[in-house]
Amino acid sequence: MASIPAPARRPVNTERVELLTRDLLIALGEDPDREGLAETPRRVAAWWSEFLDRDHGKLGTTFTHDTTHDDFVLLRGIEVWSLCEHHLLPFRLNVSIAYVPQAQVLGLSKLVRQLHLHAAALQLQERITDAVANDIAKAAGTDDVAVFAEGEHLCMSMRGVQAGSVRTITSCRLGRTASDPELARRIERLAIGPGQ
Image 1 (cartoon, rainbow, N blue to C red):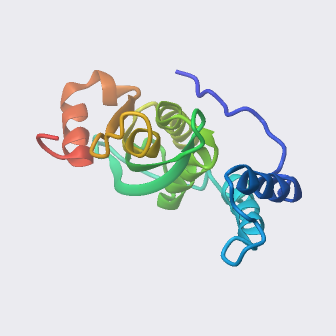
Image 2: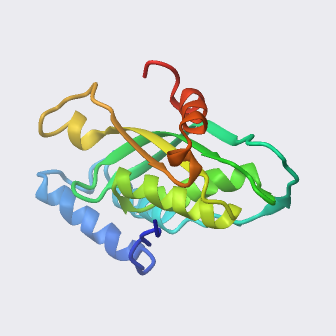
Image 3: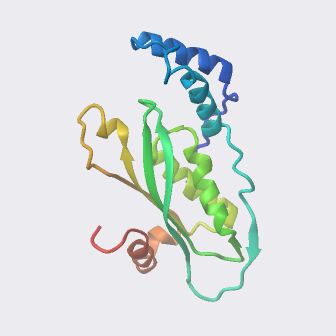
């Protein structure tokens, strides 16, 4: 499965975002010059730039690895925030990433960096899950990758149906993490726990 790249975009125009935020406050019936809101447009513009234009650092650091068995590397409990592209509301993901190293292993921080790279955008949970799995497979040189994500979406919790306890589960399993039932079971048991 090929990773679907996020559309290219220009850097955030913070001056324009600041003006638009000021206009939004006026449209919402607020006074953007009152105490408490006077610095809000600047802070909002700075946040958008910090979120969308952040430097994700090196993504592909690998180390040589000799193996003769099916051990895997698994990180779980990685928390990341993203923004729903349909409503511009945040969603929080709790993610587990697993892969079976072949001739090389990725630096552990690189797994988290891949996740942050894809989350720092106007996104869908499904797209993040698939893109992270595919990009880790490329970086690690193995198709044996699985990504599990559990999301809380504020577009469900605070608007629409207002279902605050609903969680969305997505997964992407590549290679033997999908085709080998025993390996898949071992990874899933550790990634999301029994009975969940």
